[in-house]
Image (cartoon, rainbow, N blue to C red):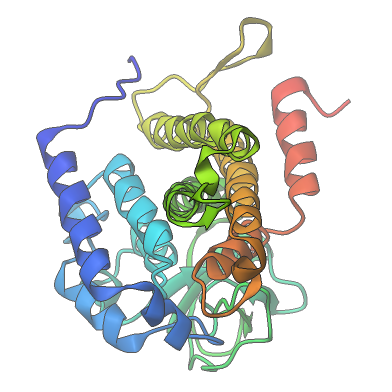
Length: 338
């Protein structure tokens, strides 16, 4: 099965719909107003009205039947708008445990990225607002329904993180822990796409600013040093976007799961998902750094939006832990752990 970069008609419609929706409903002031928790309940209800909750759940389970490739498009729009809603986490949770209230959005779901230690999941993404947390506890994947704390520890990107119990609450065993790697790979794929959205919007903001900002009677964007500083970013963004879409493609059951470093051929879902997550994170950090730098001192002020993109580019990629550990784990998958 070949990897096709072209969008279907439905995917073009999804792109237009969600870009328009977030442009209207999640302008930068919405993200700013949602700090420090990083969650806007009204915006969440509006996204539910679009059918987001069960969009990527198979039709057989009552969902919309959209593929992970479709969800990647939505995730990029989320990142570009810094939308303070846990669409990525909920989509993955609903696909993993497609019970009615998750599919319909009556309950908000998320996943714990690391196994529980002594009955406790640490720094769960969207854990401060989620009704149901799905993760590994011992040898099982469990779904635990309990009251969301509604508060998060202070963090650089104003994310609704929280520690959650893997045993207190309405607890259901839904699978074997060995299958959870795929769940995390879906989260990495979608989060990679949010980072692509951050990088793309940051570049757009930087280009717009250097065209408007004048020095010595000319736009600062006319200076060669500024042009060179921005010129390499589009390639990083396009590469990140391709990797995110390839990861989603590799998740399909009819794609051979290949790891062949001698031929530079990788179609294994977990491997490509890690590649996308790491590369998109690096691209987002680089793009926001350059854009903020060319904003000058204004870039550090709270009034300018680029500082929010700068912080989230760094914070979102750290939700899964130190990227250096992810690089080591990826190398082990690609080349062996010896």
